[in-house]
Length: 419
Ligand code: AMP
Ligand code: MG
Image (cartoon, rainbow, N blue to C red; front, top):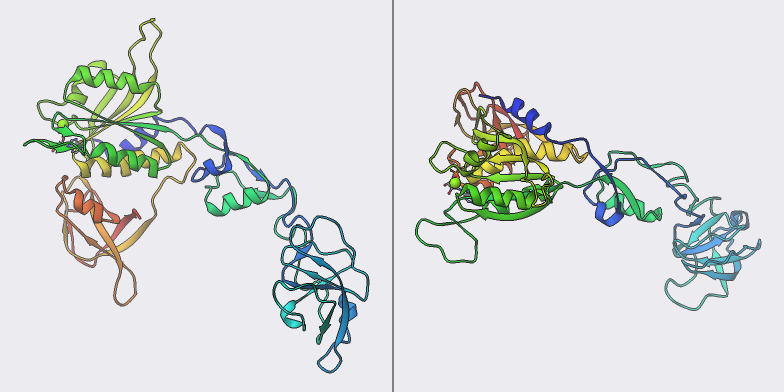
């Protein structure tokens, strides 16, 4: 039997290092930058007003007070977007809006609320009166005060989220170098499977692993495609694998790898010798397999592509827990993303039992305890591997160490936070 850590290493080794690709900024969302991004321009690009108000020369208001108001003529009106360059003559004010370029010669902005001017879209006042002095530099956003031209905007390895998209767009950047997303094709097996939307006969079930694992791949940052399923027939299975191999960076199969009589994946791929089937000391998810699928030669004799393949057990809980433990970290590392879910230590909300000799991943729900003194995880659902409902309710996996056979409520446990 392999340990979880040993099999994680084998799965991770199926992938090469992240491959750089240039993507338009919106498409780079959720991906990791593979090169530093330096600012091609400064932000702000020019001195501008931080308030709606009046651009002035602070010295002109030095004597302003409640009993000694200073009134200046309003010589110009500067809305945001005005592109000509203006100069403020001493002894005048310019009405200026937030984000509008500061006229040369002005060194402060007085917010409209602090003047006698009317707030709102009225015709420019002829004069404006101030009853307090203003500090030089007040309410001015200086060019480059956010980021200077040539400064590091995003270091390599940054995961692009909404703020990073905002910064790149503000810098006028349209393309960015990120890790190429991996294409994952999910192929389920089972003669009992029926596509949702069709009627079921007795003994049939709706195919769910394909949809679920495709969603998991997409959540992990891959381009997932649900190839659907084939019956338990090695010929059908291998033909379908060959079809998808050309378009995939990883093929995930579900089902057909345990010890039953119609183990289509195991039977088909044991014969090709390219996939290793092993037992991993974990629950759920003991039967695992991975390797490289070498697609059959084309009709013109050219060699078929060789694609990493991971064969997951068919029980839905086993399949998704296996994905979490082995595939998600490997996929993320191969695309430059942080590999792991956050891990926290929580106190068990109830007693648990665990098979000795197997690392167990139990479904759990996190909560903050009443005293607010820490995080509690309540185990939910039985350990059997068909309980999709509890999987859907869980927001955590409780990682119970291999040699533990049980833990009492209140014991600290290591928890993978799923959501
Ligand atoms: P297997 O690993 O093929 O022996 O399947 C184990 C259990 O998981 C059986 O109860 C199957 O019916 C179920 N199962 C296998 N594949 C799927 C699937 N794609 N969707 C839903 N259930 C499945
Ligand atoms: Mg099956």
